[in-house]
Amino acid sequence: MKKLLAIIMSFCVALTAFIGTGCVGTKGSNSPNVLDVYCYVSGYGDTYLTNSAGTGVLDIFTEQDWVKAKYPNVKVSYTSNGEAGFANNKLYNQKSNTFDLIFSSWLDAIPQSLVVNLTDAVYKKDVPGKEDTKIIDILPEHVRESIRRDDVENNRTDGYEDYFSVRYLSEFFSFMYNKDVLDFYDMDLPVTTKEFEEACETVENSIATHTATNPTAYTYKVGTQSFVIDTGLMMSAKNSYIQWMFPAFWTQYEGIQNYRNFFEGEYFGELSTENFKQKGRLRAFQTMEDLVREHHWEGAAEANNTEAQNEFILGNGLFHWNGDYFTTEMVGEREQNRDKYGVEDNIGMMAIPVMSSLVEKLSFYVEDTGSFVEAERAGTTYLTSTEKPYHMLDETKQEYYDNILAAIIREIDAGVTYANSTAKTGNGYTVSQADWNIVASARNIKGYNSLTSYSAVIPSGSPAKDLAADFLRFMYSDIGIEAFSNASEGMLFPVDYFGSLSDTEYEEAVAGFEQESQDKFELIFKKGSTLIPSESTFALGRSGLEKYAYSGNEGTNMVTSGDSYKKPVDFFIDDILTYTGANYSNWESLCQLAGKM
Image 1 (cartoon, helix red, strand yellow):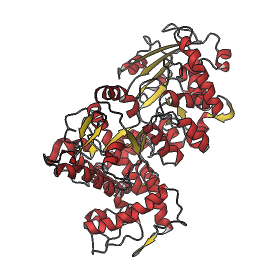
Image 2 (spheres, one colour):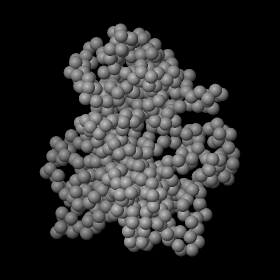
Image 3 (cartoon, rainbow, N blue to C red):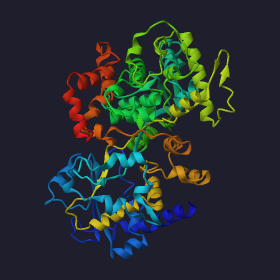
Image 4 (tube, helix red, strand yellow):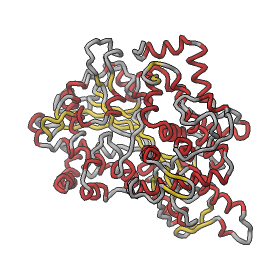
C-alpha cells in the first residue's frame, strides 16, 4: 500500500508540468496514440480523471511503462462540460464525434451499434499488474448485473453475456448529520427510526418552547455567527434524493433476497405477482412518510438542493438525506461560509437507522389483539393473523420494543457476537440467534448504493479503441483505484477494493479524506455492508417495473402538498397489483420484454 501511494505521489510534481504540454493532444486526432476524452461534469466534478496536480487517473495512466511501450508518444486530449445531452448528441451523430472515450450519465440506453462491445476488450482481459485476474472476476455481482446485457436482450442463444459500458461512479446515499448540532443537544447518533424521530423532536420542541427572553433555547454559535436550528430533517422538495430512503428501509425489512425476488417477479421459485405484496415495502413507505411529513424543513418546497444543503451546513437542521457527492458539490459554499461567518462545519455520514417496525419479525414480538386486516396482505410477512403492527402500538409498547432493538444494534455496531451479548435477555424477553441475525442483516443496509447513472463508453467510430479500452482496464488496477479515490476525496469507484485491505492499509488509504468521506468508507468497507442493487440491474426493472417499484417523487409530494396529501400508505402495494392484475397483459408484456415468458 505504501509503495502504491508513494508511486502516486511521485507523479504529482512531475505531471503538473506534463499536463500542460506533452500530455495534451490535438482534439479530434485520428491517431491510435491520442486518446480524446469527454466527461460530463455533475456534482462529483471530474478531478478523478485529470487535475492541475496531475494526480487524476488519466494523468497517471499516460506515465505507465506498459502504456508508453504499447502506445509510443501517447497523448490525451480532454474536454468536459455540464451539458446533460452533449454525450448523447455525439454518440447519435458519430460523423461529427471526435471522442474516443465518453464519460456521462444514462448511456446504457444508447443503441449497441453506436458503441464498442467491451466484453472481450475490457471485461475478459487481465487487470493491469495482476496476471490471470480478469476484470470480470473482481467486480461484485451487483455491478455485473447492472450493466450486462444477456442473451435474451441480444437475441442470442448461447448464454453469452455482453457488456457495452463501464460503471465509473457508484453513488452512495445515506443520512448525513451535523455534529455540532448533535453535540449542542448532547445526543447520541440514533440507530432506530424511533430514536431518529425523537432526535428530530428534541430539536423541534426546543423551538416550540423558545421565548424572547431565552433565545439560546434554539441557537448555537460557531465562529462569529449564531445559527437558528428549526428542523430535524433538512431536505429540498426540488430533487428526488429523498426517495432513496425507500429501498433502504424496504430491504432492511425484507432482506436482500426478497428485494431481488421483487424485481425478478419470483415468489417461492415461481414467476408470480404475489411477491409484490411484500409487507416490508409497505412498512418502508409508512416509515418514510412519518419522517418526511412530520420533520421536514419548512423551506423545503421552495429551496433547491444546493440552498438546502447550505442551510444544513450552517446548522439549520440536524439530519439530511444526501449522497457522497456532497463533499465535492459543496466546496464553494463551504469556502464562502468560512470567509463570511468563520464557520468550519462538522458534517458526518451515518448508517441509516433500522426501521423500528423490524421488531415485528422477531420472536419476542407478541401482540395478540384478535384478527387484524393487514394479515390479508400476507405476502412474505412474518405477522400472524392476531399480531398488531408496531406502528399501531401505544407509545409505551413502542418504547419497550424499540429499546430492545436499539440495544441489539449498538452491540452489533460494537462488534459484539450473539454469544457474548448482554442485550439478548432482559425483563420478559429473550432474543434468539435467528432474531440477532435478522437485526444484523438489517443493520448491514447502511445506505443505498446506486449504479444507474454514470457510464463510460467507447464510440464505435473511434480510431483509438484499443487505447481507450486499456484506459478502462487501468481504472480497475490497484494504482488506478487508489488514484481515483485520492483525486476525488474518497468518491466511490464500483469495486470492493478498500474492503480487502488490512486495517493498517485501510487507515493509511483513507487518512487524507474529508470526514464525511471517511465515514462513508467506514460504513461501506471497514465494517462491511450489503449494497442494494438498483432496479436497472434486473431485466424486469429495465422492462418497466421500476415505474411501480419505488416511491417515485412521493417524498416531494408529501412536502409540497401539505395536508392535501391524502394518498393511503398502502398505495405502493395497490398500484402495482392493479397494474399487473386488473390487466394481465401488462404483466405478460413486462415478462416478455424481460425474457421471462
